[in-house]
Length: 221
Ligand SMILES: NC(=O)c1ccc[n+]([C@@H]2O[C@H](COP(=O)([O-])OP(=O)(O)OC[C@H]3O[C@@H](n4cnc5c(N)ncnc54)[C@H](OP(=O)(O)O)[C@@H]3O)[C@@H](O)[C@H]2O)c1
Image (cartoon, rainbow, N blue to C red):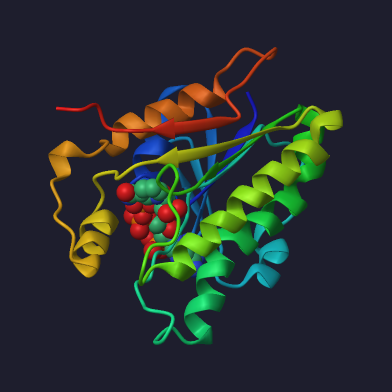
């Protein structure tokens, strides 16, 4: 099996995802802001997704790759009246423009392997959320990126999946819900390890078919 490039590998979802992939026998390239290095089947590449123009140099040449999973994301809370250009630029850079750039850079390798792009989006059906427009807007753009790419790359055998997870019990979700003034019950959320195993399952589908969209909800209690 070839390598899987994972962004957001240090995150509440990305960490368990890297563990699940390694357990499934995958070689993982973890894109993060920490220093580059290698441990236990994981090679770390240092990159700042807020600066998509720097990613080509950070990534270097990619000879072989089975999959790219974009799990990095930021979710600032600010009303349109308060969010300055830095908020919009950073949110769109990390959440969508960096994904587009990493896809562009890895497509030759993904075409060779008839590989898979997985984009971690937002909760199923999320739209028009007050004080969250930069985040929700960036995820709408991420969905469009996925849907266009799926059609563009069909002839090359590249699979494109969008994952729509509802609230997943990470520190990020706790902070977000606090910021939005919403109640938070982590045990009623998707557990990050569960989501990680579902994404790993998407990647492990037999070659004839795949899940192009995966909406994940916590089981009602
Ligand atoms: N948790 C949920 O309820 C939930 C629900 C639906 C969708 N999602 C989506 O799932 C993804 C992961 O969420 P999470 O809860 O795991 O969030 P998280 O714990 O905050 O993880 C975010 C990841 O993105 C990375 N990142 C942020 N800015 C970066 C930058 N400039 N350059 C490189 N990496 C950067 C972080 O790296 P650092 O460690 O360096 O900060 C971290 O690894 C996000 O796309 C989020 O929108 C989450």
